[in-house]
Length: 138
Image 1 (spheres, one colour):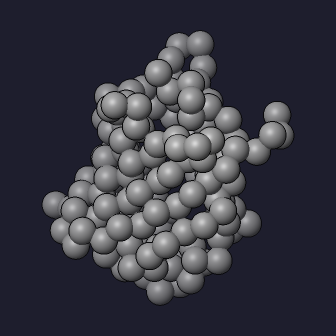
Image 2 (cartoon, helix red, strand yellow; image 1 turned 120 degrees about the vertical axis):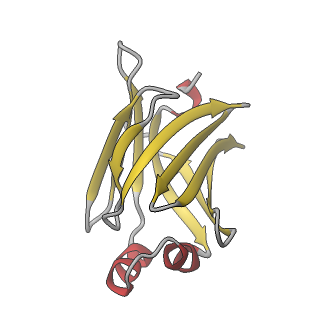
């Protein structure tokens, strides 16, 4: 299931992030802070099957807790209020966010011991890719 994603991950590279943030409507200040951030992402699963994803930067910490395939409310790092569903499809963790008639898909997969995250803003089809490596820190 999601066990391959469990652990602590650190972003090592990112492409087209500013374009993606513009496409989702993030303001200039939010984009500037986000472009400077090198987040770590912790993923865990509890005994009831709830998945938690915690992103930590020097600017902000965000955590979501959810069950796969169940819609929930999320406030994004740039303060958008979205409805989110996370599913496991073909070994990929697919996070779909919808708000104000817009949709973003964040697709995470493991390749060669790295987590690859690709974000697609459905209206503009702008891609953003992040590569994260797993920390050996418990």
